[in-house]
Image (tube, rainbow, N blue to C red; front, side, top):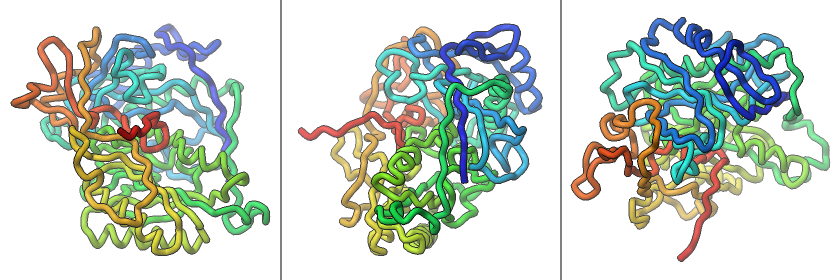
Length: 441
């Protein structure tokens, strides 16, 4: 399977009379784009903004991030979800780099939504603070969930996914500045020299704990709660087969942008044929009941051993209850003779003294930490807020609160905020972006 990603680099974004990319400047006709968004009758309010690195902008509640992409052959970029079901991972797709579409609630947030700052101390906490962003701020008529802590955010997320493809249409007939090529032969038909190298699988545990449809990550449009672990080509993940959901404390979340660009996969690709034989991806899931967790771990270990894996890298989207899936999967792999490294965040409390994961095992002896979700972050007011900052404390965002007897409210009268790292949009970057390091004192 061979995937070619043709890249176009966005240096600036402006509003203008036409949708175009010229000399690195993306021009968007705002009214035409808004007309496109409003085709979904559930959208009741919509506005577009531009947010670039250094802008004095804070966004809340942020719900989703997507890289603008288009296929020259006319296929959709999210098969089975925004377009007809078709295989992903093969052929050519065009991507607009250094750029994302962000989706922000005009009023209402929830457990799965977060904060992005484009400048100041808060900018470093999310990957999207360094990108040129087209920001859709919108509201919907989905009144049934406006006051729910858990929101499906279906209309808003779908609007963002469709807008990303709409914007990328401007490069469909252009020539990419460069092209990334991702190609893996069949796992059992590789060069003998490659097969001498240690064989490694990447195990992904996307969020799938909600038994009701509409919250979980989607695989080819299929709710990941309804699947058992399966073997996939890594190109499928990079090519839109996996779409982010709307259930997870947001610093632990993998946005669709993260999945489209998964650095862990790209790093394993880089080492393929040099230091490892990268077999592919085992797509697992996260469950609630103990027997479901054990069953998934058993499936993962069986697939890994059947493929002949010597090693595995396991990454979980979440913490808390999902830690049992994460640890159980690592233990099952180790018991099967597969040396395993885990990638996750921790929940060690505001003082950093608590047990990092809900459950632990001595076989989990190689864990990469992406930070503490409970770490307190205090930030000054920002000149411009896109969305509604009050949502941080009012609507049950995972790292905010309405009031605290010691710290007071998360959102102060002067616009400054105090919250846990939990509320930084995709802030722990378990998919491989994380710049954090560990220091021993």
